[in-house]
Amino acid sequence: MTQSLRSYLAHAFCAFLFLVSIAAFTAKVAHALPPDVQAKRSPLLAALQAEMERSMKALSAQDPPAYYLGYTITDTQRAEVSGSNGALLSSSEVRNRWLEVSVRTGTYQLDDTHKVGERQSASGGGATPVPVDDDADVVRRAVWLETDKQYRSAAEALIKIKTGKEVKVDSAENSAPDFSREEPHASILPPVSFSLDRKPWEEKVRVYTGTFRESAAIINSIVTFAAQAQNIFQVTSEGTQLQYGQIRYRLELFIQGKAPDGMDIDRYYNFDCVNPADAPDDQAVRKAQATMRMELEGLVASPINEPSVGPALLTGRAAAVFFHEVFGHRAEGHRQKDVAEGQTFAKKVGEQILPDFLSIVDDTTMKKLGREDLLGYYQFDDEGVPAQRVTLVDHGVLRGFEMSRSPLVGFPRSNGHGRRQLGATPVSRQGNLIVQSTRTMTNAQLRTELIKLIKQQGKPFGLLIDDIAGGFTFTGRGQPQAFQVLPLVVYRVFPDGRPDELVRGVDMVGTPLASLKKIVATGDTPEVFNGYCGAESGSVPVSAASPAILLSELEVQKKESSTDRPPILPPPAHDVVKAGGQP
Image: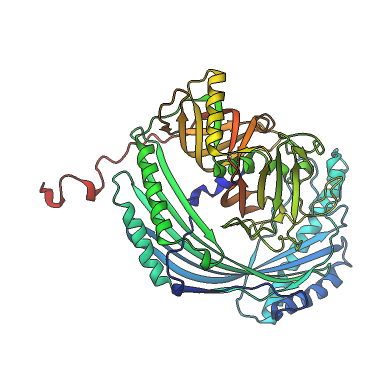
Protein backbone atom coordinates (compact mmCIF):
# COMPACT_ATOMS: atom_id res chain seq x y z
CA MET A 1 0.00 0.00 0.00
CA THR A 2 1.28 3.42 -0.84
CA GLN A 3 0.50 5.89 1.87
CA SER A 4 0.87 9.46 0.81
CA LEU A 5 -0.26 12.62 2.57
CA ARG A 6 -2.16 10.51 5.08
CA SER A 7 1.01 8.69 6.12
CA TYR A 8 1.79 11.78 8.15
CA LEU A 9 -1.37 11.21 10.20
CA ALA A 10 0.60 10.08 13.23
CA HIS A 11 1.73 13.69 13.34
CA ALA A 12 -0.51 15.11 10.62
CA PHE A 13 -1.43 17.85 13.02
CA CYS A 14 1.77 19.49 11.79
CA ALA A 15 0.79 23.07 11.43
CA PHE A 16 3.46 25.66 11.22
CA LEU A 17 2.76 29.13 12.40
CA PHE A 18 4.68 32.26 13.31
CA LEU A 19 3.51 34.61 16.00
CA VAL A 20 6.78 35.61 17.57
CA SER A 21 8.13 38.99 16.62
CA ILE A 22 10.96 38.93 14.14
CA ALA A 23 13.32 39.77 17.01
CA ALA A 24 12.56 36.37 18.54
CA PHE A 25 14.52 34.59 15.88
CA THR A 26 16.67 35.36 12.89
CA ALA A 27 17.56 33.18 9.94
CA LYS A 28 20.78 33.21 7.99
CA VAL A 29 19.44 32.29 4.58
CA ALA A 30 21.51 31.40 1.51
CA HIS A 31 20.74 33.96 -1.17
CA ALA A 32 21.12 33.14 -4.83
CA LEU A 33 24.56 33.96 -6.16
CA PRO A 34 25.43 35.05 -9.69
CA PRO A 35 26.44 32.04 -11.85
CA ASP A 36 30.12 33.03 -11.81
CA VAL A 37 30.30 33.43 -8.03
CA GLN A 38 30.96 30.40 -5.83
CA ALA A 39 30.64 30.17 -2.06
CA LYS A 40 33.42 28.81 0.10
CA ARG A 41 33.75 25.05 -0.31
CA SER A 42 33.26 23.00 2.82
CA PRO A 43 36.23 20.80 3.80
CA LEU A 44 33.69 17.95 3.81
CA LEU A 45 33.61 18.00 0.01
CA ALA A 46 37.38 17.60 -0.21
CA ALA A 47 37.30 14.69 2.25
CA LEU A 48 34.48 12.97 0.35
CA GLN A 49 36.18 13.51 -3.00
CA ALA A 50 39.52 12.14 -1.80
CA GLU A 51 37.95 8.97 -0.45
CA MET A 52 35.81 8.68 -3.58
CA GLU A 53 38.86 8.63 -5.83
CA ARG A 54 40.68 6.12 -3.64
CA SER A 55 37.70 3.78 -3.39
CA MET A 56 36.67 3.99 -7.03
CA LYS A 57 40.16 3.10 -8.23
CA ALA A 58 40.17 -0.07 -6.13
CA LEU A 59 36.53 -1.17 -6.39
CA SER A 60 36.26 -0.68 -10.15
CA ALA A 61 38.94 -3.36 -10.49
CA GLN A 62 37.07 -5.88 -8.33
CA ASP A 63 34.86 -8.70 -9.61
CA PRO A 64 32.11 -7.64 -9.95
CA PRO A 65 33.27 -4.07 -10.53
CA ALA A 66 31.74 -1.02 -8.92
CA TYR A 67 30.79 1.39 -11.70
CA TYR A 68 29.23 4.13 -9.56
CA LEU A 69 29.85 5.63 -6.12
CA GLY A 70 27.83 8.37 -4.47
CA TYR A 71 28.54 9.96 -1.10
CA THR A 72 26.11 12.29 0.71
CA ILE A 73 26.44 13.95 4.10
CA THR A 74 23.30 15.59 5.48
CA ASP A 75 23.90 18.14 8.24
CA THR A 76 20.70 18.97 10.15
CA GLN A 77 20.04 21.66 12.74
CA ARG A 78 16.58 21.36 14.30
CA ALA A 79 14.82 23.24 17.08
CA GLU A 80 11.42 22.18 18.39
CA VAL A 81 9.05 23.50 21.02
CA SER A 82 5.88 21.58 21.88
CA GLY A 83 3.02 22.25 24.27
CA SER A 84 -0.21 20.56 25.31
CA ASN A 85 -3.33 21.81 27.07
CA GLY A 86 -1.70 24.96 28.40
CA ALA A 87 1.65 23.51 29.47
CA LEU A 88 5.07 23.02 27.91
CA LEU A 89 5.83 19.45 26.80
CA SER A 90 9.36 19.83 25.45
CA SER A 91 11.89 22.33 24.17
CA SER A 92 15.08 21.22 22.46
CA GLU A 93 17.64 21.95 19.79
CA VAL A 94 19.89 19.34 18.19
CA ARG A 95 22.42 19.12 15.40
CA ASN A 96 23.59 15.95 13.70
CA ARG A 97 25.23 14.63 10.55
CA TRP A 98 24.47 11.45 8.63
CA LEU A 99 26.46 9.77 5.90
CA GLU A 100 24.87 7.82 3.05
CA VAL A 101 26.93 5.72 0.65
CA SER A 102 25.59 4.42 -2.67
CA VAL A 103 27.60 1.69 -4.42
CA ARG A 104 26.42 0.19 -7.71
CA THR A 105 28.03 -2.91 -9.17
CA GLY A 106 27.72 -4.12 -12.76
CA THR A 107 26.81 -1.64 -15.48
CA TYR A 108 24.29 1.11 -16.18
CA GLN A 109 22.28 -1.49 -18.13
CA LEU A 110 22.25 -4.19 -15.44
CA ASP A 111 23.29 -3.59 -11.85
CA ASP A 112 22.62 -4.79 -8.32
CA THR A 113 19.34 -2.83 -8.05
CA HIS A 114 17.64 -4.76 -10.88
CA LYS A 115 14.33 -6.28 -9.86
CA VAL A 116 13.74 -9.83 -11.09
CA GLY A 117 10.11 -10.94 -10.96
CA GLU A 118 8.60 -9.86 -7.66
CA ARG A 119 11.90 -9.94 -5.79
CA GLN A 120 12.07 -6.81 -3.70
CA SER A 121 15.14 -4.69 -4.24
CA ALA A 122 16.97 -3.32 -1.24
CA SER A 123 15.36 -0.32 0.45
CA GLY A 124 18.69 1.45 0.85
CA GLY A 125 21.98 1.16 2.63
CA GLY A 126 20.76 3.23 5.54
CA ALA A 127 22.51 6.20 7.07
CA THR A 128 25.52 6.25 9.38
CA PRO A 129 26.09 8.99 11.98
CA VAL A 130 29.28 11.01 11.55
CA PRO A 131 30.76 13.75 13.76
CA VAL A 132 29.63 17.33 13.30
CA ASP A 133 33.28 18.42 13.40
CA ASP A 134 34.90 19.06 10.02
CA ASP A 135 37.66 16.53 10.70
CA ALA A 136 38.70 15.13 7.30
CA ASP A 137 40.47 12.08 8.74
CA VAL A 138 37.46 11.04 10.84
CA VAL A 139 35.06 11.61 7.95
CA ARG A 140 37.19 9.60 5.53
CA ARG A 141 37.43 6.74 8.00
CA ALA A 142 33.63 6.58 8.29
CA VAL A 143 33.27 6.71 4.49
CA TRP A 144 35.88 3.98 4.05
CA LEU A 145 34.07 1.55 6.39
CA GLU A 146 30.62 2.25 4.94
CA THR A 147 31.86 1.95 1.34
CA ASP A 148 33.34 -1.46 2.05
CA LYS A 149 30.08 -2.60 3.64
CA GLN A 150 27.93 -1.33 0.77
CA TYR A 151 30.21 -2.76 -1.92
CA ARG A 152 30.03 -6.24 -0.41
CA SER A 153 26.24 -6.04 -0.25
CA ALA A 154 25.97 -4.79 -3.85
CA ALA A 155 28.35 -7.46 -5.17
CA GLU A 156 26.34 -10.24 -3.51
CA ALA A 157 23.07 -8.78 -4.83
CA LEU A 158 24.37 -8.66 -8.42
CA ILE A 159 25.35 -12.32 -8.35
CA LYS A 160 21.84 -13.28 -7.18
CA ILE A 161 20.26 -11.09 -9.85
CA LYS A 162 22.25 -12.64 -12.67
CA THR A 163 21.26 -16.09 -11.43
CA GLY A 164 17.62 -15.09 -11.10
CA LYS A 165 17.46 -13.68 -14.62
CA GLU A 166 18.29 -17.12 -15.97
CA VAL A 167 15.09 -18.63 -14.55
CA LYS A 168 12.68 -15.65 -14.46
CA VAL A 169 10.75 -14.02 -17.30
CA ASP A 170 11.55 -10.30 -17.53
CA SER A 171 8.90 -7.79 -18.55
CA ALA A 172 9.29 -5.48 -21.54
CA GLU A 173 9.15 -2.48 -19.20
CA ASN A 174 12.06 -3.88 -17.19
CA SER A 175 14.28 -4.05 -20.28
CA ALA A 176 15.22 -0.40 -19.76
CA PRO A 177 18.61 0.27 -18.13
CA ASP A 178 18.78 0.13 -14.35
CA PHE A 179 20.47 3.52 -14.02
CA SER A 180 20.40 6.54 -16.30
CA ARG A 181 23.48 8.39 -17.53
CA GLU A 182 23.25 12.00 -16.38
CA GLU A 183 25.45 15.04 -16.79
CA PRO A 184 27.47 15.85 -13.65
CA HIS A 185 26.56 19.06 -11.85
CA ALA A 186 28.57 21.40 -9.65
CA SER A 187 26.95 23.93 -7.34
CA ILE A 188 28.62 25.39 -4.27
CA LEU A 189 26.23 27.58 -2.27
CA PRO A 190 26.61 29.11 1.20
CA PRO A 191 25.52 26.97 4.15
CA VAL A 192 22.26 27.89 5.86
CA SER A 193 21.47 28.10 9.57
CA PHE A 194 19.11 29.82 11.97
CA SER A 195 19.37 31.35 15.43
CA LEU A 196 16.31 30.80 17.59
CA ASP A 197 15.38 32.02 21.06
CA ARG A 198 13.05 29.24 22.20
CA LYS A 199 11.80 31.06 25.33
CA PRO A 200 9.16 33.17 23.51
CA TRP A 201 7.93 30.05 21.71
CA GLU A 202 7.69 28.14 24.97
CA GLU A 203 5.26 30.77 26.20
CA LYS A 204 3.43 30.84 22.88
CA VAL A 205 2.66 27.10 22.86
CA ARG A 206 1.35 27.42 26.42
CA VAL A 207 -0.97 30.23 25.35
CA TYR A 208 -2.13 28.53 22.14
CA THR A 209 -2.99 25.24 23.80
CA GLY A 210 -4.43 27.02 26.84
CA THR A 211 -6.89 28.83 24.57
CA PHE A 212 -8.26 25.49 23.39
CA ARG A 213 -9.16 24.57 26.99
CA GLU A 214 -12.02 27.08 26.77
CA SER A 215 -14.03 24.46 24.87
CA ALA A 216 -15.49 21.49 26.76
CA ALA A 217 -15.57 19.54 23.47
CA ILE A 218 -11.77 19.61 23.08
CA ILE A 219 -10.27 16.63 24.92
CA ASN A 220 -6.68 17.23 23.91
CA SER A 221 -4.61 19.88 22.14
CA ILE A 222 -1.02 19.92 20.94
CA VAL A 223 0.92 22.74 19.34
CA THR A 224 4.42 22.21 17.96
CA PHE A 225 6.80 24.75 16.52
CA ALA A 226 9.80 23.48 14.54
CA ALA A 227 12.65 25.15 12.71
CA GLN A 228 14.99 23.09 10.55
CA ALA A 229 18.09 23.96 8.55
CA GLN A 230 19.51 21.18 6.39
CA ASN A 231 22.78 21.32 4.44
CA ILE A 232 23.68 18.73 1.82
CA PHE A 233 27.23 17.79 0.73
CA GLN A 234 27.30 15.34 -2.18
CA VAL A 235 29.93 13.93 -4.53
CA THR A 236 29.67 11.15 -7.10
CA SER A 237 32.10 9.20 -9.23
CA GLU A 238 30.49 10.80 -12.31
CA GLY A 239 31.82 14.21 -11.25
CA THR A 240 28.89 15.78 -9.41
CA GLN A 241 29.85 18.05 -6.51
CA LEU A 242 27.04 19.78 -4.62
CA GLN A 243 26.87 21.96 -1.53
CA TYR A 244 23.53 23.60 -0.76
CA GLY A 245 21.03 24.09 2.02
CA GLN A 246 17.40 24.79 2.82
CA ILE A 247 15.51 26.14 5.83
CA ARG A 248 11.91 25.29 6.72
CA TYR A 249 9.70 26.44 9.57
CA ARG A 250 6.40 24.97 10.66
CA LEU A 251 3.86 25.48 13.44
CA GLU A 252 1.40 22.65 13.92
CA LEU A 253 -1.99 22.90 15.60
CA PHE A 254 -3.91 19.78 16.57
CA ILE A 255 -7.08 19.33 18.62
CA GLN A 256 -9.03 16.18 19.37
CA GLY A 257 -12.58 15.50 20.46
CA LYS A 258 -14.91 12.52 20.66
CA ALA A 259 -18.50 12.09 19.46
CA PRO A 260 -21.09 10.43 21.73
CA ASP A 261 -20.82 7.19 19.72
CA GLY A 262 -17.05 7.02 20.27
CA MET A 263 -15.85 8.36 16.91
CA ASP A 264 -12.61 10.35 17.22
CA ILE A 265 -12.85 13.87 15.82
CA ASP A 266 -9.58 15.55 14.89
CA ARG A 267 -8.84 18.98 13.47
CA TYR A 268 -5.46 20.08 12.12
CA TYR A 269 -4.03 23.31 10.87
CA ASN A 270 -0.54 24.11 9.68
CA PHE A 271 1.39 27.03 8.29
CA ASP A 272 4.70 26.52 6.48
CA CYS A 273 7.20 29.16 5.47
CA VAL A 274 10.86 29.64 4.65
CA ASN A 275 11.10 33.35 5.39
CA PRO A 276 10.10 35.08 8.66
CA ALA A 277 8.66 37.94 6.63
CA ASP A 278 5.99 35.55 5.32
CA ALA A 279 4.82 34.54 8.79
CA PRO A 280 1.10 34.95 9.59
CA ASP A 281 0.18 37.55 12.19
CA ASP A 282 -1.67 37.11 15.49
CA GLN A 283 -4.99 37.70 13.79
CA ALA A 284 -4.39 34.80 11.40
CA VAL A 285 -3.59 32.52 14.33
CA ARG A 286 -6.68 33.47 16.27
CA LYS A 287 -8.77 32.97 13.16
CA ALA A 288 -7.32 29.47 12.62
CA GLN A 289 -7.95 28.53 16.24
CA ALA A 290 -11.54 29.80 16.13
CA THR A 291 -12.23 27.87 12.92
CA MET A 292 -10.75 24.66 14.33
CA ARG A 293 -12.78 24.95 17.52
CA MET A 294 -16.04 25.74 15.69
CA GLU A 295 -15.60 22.83 13.29
CA LEU A 296 -14.69 20.34 16.01
CA GLU A 297 -17.64 21.34 18.18
CA GLY A 298 -19.92 21.05 15.17
CA LEU A 299 -18.53 17.66 14.15
CA VAL A 300 -18.89 16.20 17.65
CA ALA A 301 -22.63 16.97 17.52
CA SER A 302 -23.18 16.17 13.83
CA PRO A 303 -24.82 13.03 12.37
CA ILE A 304 -22.92 10.27 10.61
CA ASN A 305 -23.25 10.22 6.84
CA GLU A 306 -24.37 6.89 5.40
CA PRO A 307 -22.56 5.36 2.37
CA SER A 308 -23.74 7.03 -0.82
CA VAL A 309 -22.97 7.86 -4.45
CA GLY A 310 -23.75 11.24 -5.91
CA PRO A 311 -22.46 14.63 -7.05
CA ALA A 312 -19.73 16.27 -4.97
CA LEU A 313 -17.89 19.56 -4.84
CA LEU A 314 -14.34 19.58 -3.49
CA THR A 315 -12.73 22.83 -2.41
CA GLY A 316 -9.23 23.52 -3.72
CA ARG A 317 -7.29 22.02 -0.78
CA ALA A 318 -9.48 18.92 -0.85
CA ALA A 319 -9.09 18.65 -4.64
CA ALA A 320 -5.31 18.98 -4.31
CA VAL A 321 -5.17 15.89 -2.07
CA PHE A 322 -7.56 14.09 -4.42
CA PHE A 323 -5.18 14.58 -7.36
CA HIS A 324 -2.13 13.68 -5.26
CA GLU A 325 -3.69 10.34 -4.33
CA VAL A 326 -5.72 9.43 -7.37
CA PHE A 327 -3.36 10.63 -10.10
CA GLY A 328 0.01 11.62 -8.66
CA HIS A 329 1.21 8.30 -7.29
CA ARG A 330 0.32 6.53 -10.52
CA ALA A 331 2.42 9.01 -12.50
CA GLU A 332 5.60 8.16 -10.58
CA GLY A 333 7.98 6.61 -13.09
CA HIS A 334 9.17 3.57 -11.16
CA ARG A 335 5.60 2.28 -10.93
CA GLN A 336 5.47 1.86 -14.72
CA LYS A 337 8.53 -0.39 -14.62
CA ASP A 338 7.76 -2.71 -11.71
CA VAL A 339 5.89 -5.90 -12.62
CA ALA A 340 4.39 -5.96 -9.12
CA GLU A 341 2.73 -2.57 -9.73
CA GLY A 342 -0.68 -2.01 -11.30
CA GLN A 343 0.96 0.12 -14.03
CA THR A 344 -2.24 2.09 -14.49
CA PHE A 345 -0.73 4.63 -16.89
CA ALA A 346 2.25 2.68 -18.29
CA LYS A 347 0.68 2.18 -21.74
CA LYS A 348 -1.38 5.37 -21.82
CA VAL A 349 1.15 8.01 -22.88
CA GLY A 350 -0.53 10.01 -25.64
CA GLU A 351 -4.01 8.93 -24.52
CA GLN A 352 -6.79 10.99 -22.95
CA ILE A 353 -6.99 10.21 -19.22
CA LEU A 354 -8.60 13.44 -17.96
CA PRO A 355 -11.17 15.88 -19.34
CA ASP A 356 -9.56 18.09 -21.99
CA PHE A 357 -9.82 21.23 -19.87
CA LEU A 358 -7.34 19.86 -17.29
CA SER A 359 -3.53 19.92 -17.37
CA ILE A 360 -1.10 18.81 -14.65
CA VAL A 361 2.55 19.72 -14.10
CA ASP A 362 4.99 18.79 -11.36
CA ASP A 363 7.25 21.79 -10.93
CA THR A 364 9.81 21.43 -8.15
CA THR A 365 11.48 24.72 -9.16
CA MET A 366 8.46 26.65 -7.80
CA LYS A 367 9.11 28.19 -4.38
CA LYS A 368 5.68 29.77 -4.03
CA LEU A 369 2.22 29.72 -5.55
CA GLY A 370 0.71 33.11 -4.96
CA ARG A 371 1.63 33.91 -1.36
CA GLU A 372 1.90 30.27 -0.29
CA ASP A 373 5.29 28.62 0.17
CA LEU A 374 5.47 25.20 -1.49
CA LEU A 375 6.96 22.34 0.54
CA GLY A 376 7.83 20.42 -2.63
CA TYR A 377 10.45 22.95 -3.74
CA TYR A 378 14.11 21.91 -3.86
CA GLN A 379 17.27 22.76 -5.80
CA PHE A 380 18.50 19.23 -6.54
CA ASP A 381 16.83 15.88 -6.02
CA ASP A 382 18.46 13.20 -3.85
CA GLU A 383 20.31 11.75 -6.86
CA GLY A 384 22.03 15.05 -7.65
CA VAL A 385 19.78 15.98 -10.60
CA PRO A 386 18.52 19.59 -10.80
CA ALA A 387 14.86 20.28 -10.03
CA GLN A 388 12.73 20.60 -13.16
CA ARG A 389 9.24 21.43 -14.37
CA VAL A 390 7.59 18.34 -15.87
CA THR A 391 4.38 18.31 -17.92
CA LEU A 392 2.44 15.19 -16.92
CA VAL A 393 -0.94 15.90 -18.54
CA ASP A 394 -1.60 18.41 -21.32
CA HIS A 395 -5.28 19.18 -21.95
CA GLY A 396 -6.28 15.77 -20.66
CA VAL A 397 -3.61 13.81 -22.55
CA LEU A 398 -0.92 11.94 -20.60
CA ARG A 399 2.52 13.17 -21.67
CA GLY A 400 5.01 11.82 -19.16
CA PHE A 401 5.98 10.74 -15.68
CA GLU A 402 7.95 11.94 -12.67
CA MET A 403 11.33 10.31 -13.30
CA SER A 404 14.25 9.36 -11.08
CA ARG A 405 17.45 7.80 -12.45
CA SER A 406 15.58 4.54 -13.04
CA PRO A 407 14.81 4.88 -16.79
CA LEU A 408 11.75 3.70 -18.68
CA VAL A 409 11.48 2.67 -22.31
CA GLY A 410 10.94 6.01 -24.05
CA PHE A 411 12.03 7.99 -20.98
CA PRO A 412 15.80 7.44 -20.68
CA ARG A 413 16.67 10.37 -18.40
CA SER A 414 15.77 11.65 -14.96
CA ASN A 415 13.72 14.83 -14.68
CA GLY A 416 14.82 15.52 -11.12
CA HIS A 417 12.24 13.57 -9.12
CA GLY A 418 14.45 10.97 -7.41
CA ARG A 419 13.61 11.53 -3.74
CA ARG A 420 13.93 9.79 -0.40
CA GLN A 421 13.89 10.15 3.33
CA LEU A 422 17.29 9.99 4.98
CA GLY A 423 18.58 6.40 4.81
CA ALA A 424 16.28 5.13 2.03
CA THR A 425 16.95 4.52 -1.67
CA PRO A 426 15.58 7.31 -3.92
CA VAL A 427 12.68 6.49 -6.24
CA SER A 428 10.52 8.75 -8.41
CA ARG A 429 8.27 10.85 -6.20
CA GLN A 430 5.94 13.83 -6.46
CA GLY A 431 7.14 17.32 -5.57
CA ASN A 432 4.85 20.26 -6.45
CA LEU A 433 1.83 18.78 -8.26
CA ILE A 434 -0.04 21.68 -9.89
CA VAL A 435 -3.47 21.23 -11.52
CA GLN A 436 -4.51 23.80 -14.13
CA SER A 437 -7.90 24.25 -15.81
CA THR A 438 -9.36 26.09 -18.79
CA ARG A 439 -12.98 25.46 -17.74
CA THR A 440 -13.35 27.62 -14.68
CA MET A 441 -16.19 29.31 -12.85
CA THR A 442 -16.71 31.10 -9.55
CA ASN A 443 -17.45 29.21 -6.36
CA ALA A 444 -21.03 30.43 -6.49
CA GLN A 445 -21.40 29.11 -10.06
CA LEU A 446 -19.90 25.76 -9.03
CA ARG A 447 -22.43 25.47 -6.24
CA THR A 448 -25.25 26.20 -8.67
CA GLU A 449 -23.95 23.46 -10.98
CA LEU A 450 -23.75 21.06 -8.02
CA ILE A 451 -27.41 21.64 -7.20
CA LYS A 452 -28.34 21.11 -10.87
CA LEU A 453 -26.59 17.73 -10.83
CA ILE A 454 -28.34 16.74 -7.59
CA LYS A 455 -31.71 17.48 -9.16
CA GLN A 456 -30.88 15.80 -12.48
CA GLN A 457 -29.82 12.61 -10.70
CA GLY A 458 -32.76 12.66 -8.30
CA LYS A 459 -30.51 12.57 -5.26
CA PRO A 460 -31.62 13.86 -1.85
CA PHE A 461 -28.34 15.76 -1.44
CA GLY A 462 -24.83 16.24 -2.74
CA LEU A 463 -21.63 16.66 -0.76
CA LEU A 464 -19.39 19.67 -0.24
CA ILE A 465 -15.97 18.50 0.95
CA ASP A 466 -14.15 21.42 2.51
CA ASP A 467 -11.03 19.96 4.14
CA ILE A 468 -9.07 16.72 4.01
CA ALA A 469 -6.54 15.16 6.39
CA GLY A 470 -4.92 13.11 3.63
CA GLY A 471 -5.43 9.70 2.13
CA PHE A 472 -3.83 6.58 0.77
CA THR A 473 -3.90 4.61 -2.42
CA PHE A 474 -3.20 1.05 -3.52
CA THR A 475 -0.97 0.75 -6.58
CA GLY A 476 0.22 -2.88 -6.36
CA ARG A 477 -0.96 -5.35 -8.99
CA GLY A 478 -2.12 -7.86 -6.36
CA GLN A 479 -4.39 -5.25 -4.77
CA PRO A 480 -7.51 -3.46 -5.98
CA GLN A 481 -6.54 -0.29 -7.87
CA ALA A 482 -8.40 1.92 -5.45
CA PHE A 483 -7.94 5.03 -3.34
CA GLN A 484 -9.30 6.24 -0.03
CA VAL A 485 -9.24 9.93 0.81
CA LEU A 486 -10.04 11.08 4.34
CA PRO A 487 -12.13 14.25 4.58
CA LEU A 488 -12.32 16.21 7.81
CA VAL A 489 -15.10 18.69 7.06
CA VAL A 490 -18.05 17.58 4.90
CA TYR A 491 -21.46 19.19 4.34
CA ARG A 492 -24.64 17.84 2.80
CA VAL A 493 -25.96 20.30 0.21
CA PHE A 494 -29.71 20.05 -0.39
CA PRO A 495 -31.43 20.93 -3.70
CA ASP A 496 -34.45 22.56 -1.97
CA GLY A 497 -32.51 25.45 -0.46
CA ARG A 498 -32.21 24.13 3.10
CA PRO A 499 -29.04 25.17 4.93
CA ASP A 500 -26.03 22.91 4.46
CA GLU A 501 -25.71 20.19 7.11
CA LEU A 502 -22.34 19.29 8.64
CA VAL A 503 -21.81 15.51 8.76
CA ARG A 504 -19.01 13.23 9.94
CA GLY A 505 -17.65 9.76 9.33
CA VAL A 506 -17.07 10.23 5.59
CA ASP A 507 -14.32 8.54 3.57
CA MET A 508 -14.03 9.09 -0.19
CA VAL A 509 -13.37 5.88 -2.14
CA GLY A 510 -13.11 4.85 -5.77
CA THR A 511 -10.93 3.70 -8.63
CA PRO A 512 -8.67 6.15 -10.48
CA LEU A 513 -9.52 5.76 -14.16
CA ALA A 514 -13.26 6.02 -13.52
CA SER A 515 -13.07 8.81 -10.93
CA LEU A 516 -10.85 11.12 -13.00
CA LYS A 517 -13.39 11.08 -15.83
CA LYS A 518 -16.14 12.31 -13.46
CA ILE A 519 -14.70 15.83 -13.19
CA VAL A 520 -17.04 18.21 -15.01
CA ALA A 521 -15.89 21.71 -13.97
CA THR A 522 -13.41 23.57 -11.80
CA GLY A 523 -13.15 26.76 -9.81
CA ASP A 524 -11.03 29.73 -10.75
CA THR A 525 -8.73 29.96 -7.72
CA PRO A 526 -5.99 27.40 -6.93
CA GLU A 527 -5.44 26.38 -3.30
CA VAL A 528 -2.37 24.69 -1.80
CA PHE A 529 -2.06 21.63 0.43
CA ASN A 530 1.36 21.20 2.06
CA GLY A 531 2.14 17.88 3.71
CA TYR A 532 4.46 14.92 3.98
CA CYS A 533 4.08 11.93 1.69
CA GLY A 534 5.13 8.45 2.78
CA ALA A 535 5.91 5.69 0.28
CA GLU A 536 8.71 3.23 -0.53
CA SER A 537 11.49 5.77 -0.06
CA GLY A 538 10.12 7.19 3.16
CA SER A 539 8.51 10.48 4.05
CA VAL A 540 9.23 13.51 1.84
CA PRO A 541 7.76 17.05 1.84
CA VAL A 542 5.28 17.66 -0.97
CA SER A 543 2.76 20.21 -2.17
CA ALA A 544 -0.33 19.83 -4.29
CA ALA A 545 -2.36 22.71 -5.72
CA SER A 546 -5.71 22.70 -7.46
CA PRO A 547 -8.81 24.79 -7.99
CA ALA A 548 -12.08 23.46 -6.61
CA ILE A 549 -13.50 20.59 -8.67
CA LEU A 550 -17.03 19.41 -9.34
CA LEU A 551 -17.54 15.67 -9.80
CA SER A 552 -20.69 14.28 -11.33
CA GLU A 553 -20.35 11.21 -9.12
CA LEU A 554 -18.37 10.32 -6.01
CA GLU A 555 -18.70 7.33 -3.72
CA VAL A 556 -18.28 7.70 0.02
CA GLN A 557 -18.17 5.10 2.76
CA LYS A 558 -18.29 5.16 6.55
CA LYS A 559 -15.11 6.13 8.32
CA GLU A 560 -13.43 3.64 10.62
CA SER A 561 -14.51 4.45 14.17
CA SER A 562 -13.49 3.74 17.73
CA THR A 563 -16.07 2.24 20.10
CA ASP A 564 -14.60 3.87 23.18
CA ARG A 565 -17.10 6.17 24.84
CA PRO A 566 -16.25 9.79 25.64
CA PRO A 567 -14.88 10.51 29.14
CA ILE A 568 -17.49 10.02 31.87
CA LEU A 569 -16.79 13.41 33.44
CA PRO A 570 -16.37 16.74 31.65
CA PRO A 571 -12.99 18.53 31.77
CA PRO A 572 -12.32 19.83 35.31
CA ALA A 573 -12.67 23.47 34.29
CA HIS A 574 -16.10 22.77 32.78
CA ASP A 575 -17.53 20.70 35.62
CA VAL A 576 -20.57 22.21 37.32
CA VAL A 577 -19.32 20.87 40.65
CA LYS A 578 -16.12 22.72 41.54
CA ALA A 579 -13.05 21.41 43.32
CA GLY A 580 -13.66 20.12 46.83
CA GLY A 581 -17.19 19.02 46.01
CA GLN A 582 -18.65 22.55 46.49
CA PRO A 583 -21.23 23.71 43.93
